[in-house]
Structures are given as structure tokens and as C-alpha cells.
Image (cartoon, rainbow, N blue to C red; front, side, top):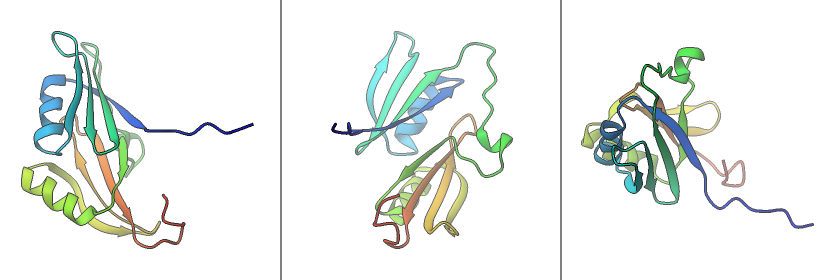
Amino acid sequence: MTKAGILRQASVLFASNLPATIAYWQEKLGFEKYGIFGELPVFAIMEYGNAFAMLKQAPEGHSIVPYWQTSEGLWNAYFWVDDVQSMFDDMRARGATIDYGLCDQFYNVREFAVYDPDRQSIGFGQLLTAATGGKP
């Protein structure tokens, strides 16, 4: 029996103000609009290369709790990248809200994180060596 392959992956996040969150992902993080759905947008897919983030308008009155508030240092989404320094420089220049700057982690990754408008942490990391065969 042949094992099926995964072609792409998408993080899924709630947004308290979806139009503002779409604009932030596009203007501050450099993602492109892949699809916006609903007259008043209720769902969006943002794309950066072969990576996607799906954004869903949270129900009225819903409180979004970023993962780091439950477990210190935990992201709501994480993306593996091929040039973390360039990505950090670009997002900082665009005015993204930085959670923490570039740092080398004990798990062999150079990374940084930004906040989205709801203070959810979005991490971006690059392997420091090919110790894992070059794959995260």
C-alpha cells in the first residue's frame, strides 16, 4: 500500500477583526491574498510561497486567547523558512509587531516571532545545520 503525501499545510487562526487582520498579514508580514470569502469577509486564505494561513472571523463576543498565555513561549502558528534573516529584516521594515527578535534556540533553529493584531504569536525559523537531514 502506498502512503499518501501531504501537498501543503495551513495554520488556522481566529481573528477578532478579519479585515484588519487580512491587511496586517499582507502589509506587515508580506503574505498575499489567496482567497477572501463572504461579503463582509468571514474567511480568508493568505499565501507566502507554498505556505498558507487560514483566517476566520471569530464569533461576536468570542475571546481569542493566544497560546503563549496558556503555555509560555508557544506560538499559534510556525513557518519553516530558508532565509530567516531576510524575512526578519523585511517584516521589521514593514512595521510588523515583533514578539521576539532573531535568536538561536537549543533545538537547532534560528528564529523570531511576530504578533498578529490579536497578540497571537507567529514564529518563523530556519535550521542552523543539516543535523536532521535538512528537514524540520
